[in-house]
Image 1: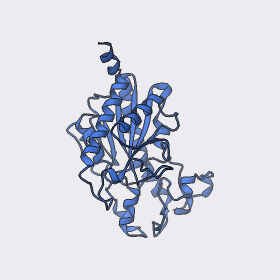
Image 2: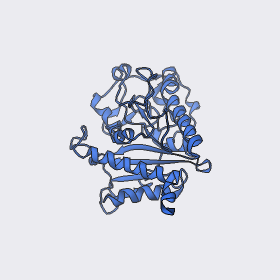
Image 3: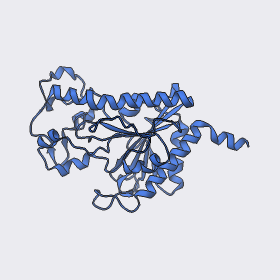
Image 4: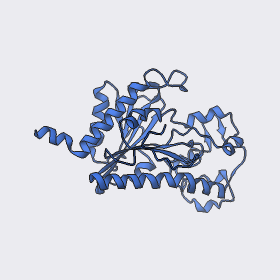
Length: 295
């Protein structure tokens, strides 16, 4: 997955891979936090369900959706370890104490709705599958996962955004995800959902232009419903400092086959559509569109 410009100094089991960060050409960073497929042995050894159930936690092959973006020179950070190991789009405080041995429940006095639903920083259960793990995870082991995999990813996102801002005076984080097919109130399938945390993570024009881009290609698009953006945007987007954040959810049926496990023939076209979106956002951020209009 790494490009010629990727960081070659990362250890073999790093939590993430990097592309095109040495010489920044664009003010847009693409993050793919839920595409990891390198499952640690200790995770598989503790499974209480067939391993195939863990595919439901993946944004299946969302990394391939970034292939054209990488080839065009955009900086990209991509998870290598799976969401079942640690969810990079959750806060380190979103721990379910009932799945941890040696943890004082008073350390998490406020349990979020996502944690109660089994999808905290360490997923606990899936609908129809029950509890994922045979034995509770040791608290120190959980802390190690957070310190070695979760926090380094976020530290690198923060670093790259800072570098982009220093070069261009602005930065935009595009957090790329995929979603199961969802439908609007008229039973119309939604192709793309753009999340900006209801206007808190970026200037409204970036979300509007992104929606217009996909709508212009004939896709049904929604903004903030049913996904408005998660911890990645909450932590890193700072519109008041000209660091903006968008979450992009892609309907898996647009690029996966009927089994939802393998890529379809349309995957390349969807990846290129995302590349075009990134080019458009980069032009908006850099003001090239304004220069061209003035010529």
